[in-house]
Length: 163
Image (tube, rainbow, N blue to C red; front, side, top):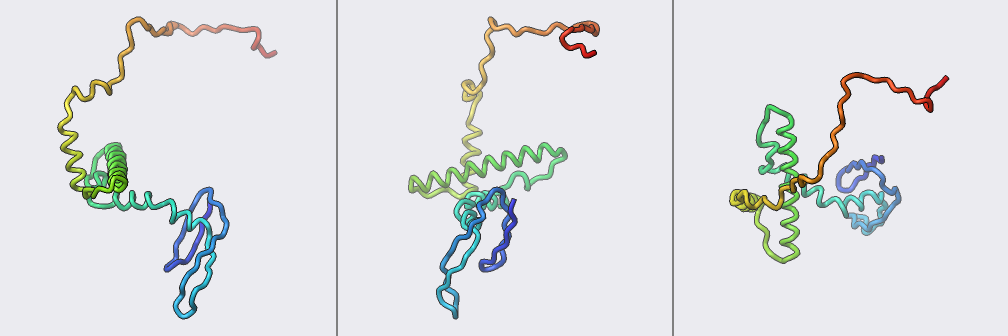
């Protein structure tokens, strides 16, 4: 685990696991000085390259459509379940937006997308879930039940006796 501090326009702190701690360079135009070459940890460029999706996910989770933060629940597991549901919905919305970008279509905003999803889920009937149900085991396959012993029986094996 590596903790790193780097100053871009303001101080930035990084905490990462398993990074390669090499240096990279970038050209900056500084007022009064001109173009200079600045070295920085490779960790910074890796973050800027790969962490865009995580930042988008965190921003969407903290907005007004969060199920987990909108309500208070008596039981902790209800809030935990709503958090997982919230994660799934945000991931689905991000996937929808990426698909719209690939197909060059204008994506719906998040509220309209949730409303469309809500309407689609309300239209589902029990017949839609027939294929999703796990098949019941056939009656020909019997599982062997272990016989319960009524008492405790000591059995000595000569191979395991230590003298």
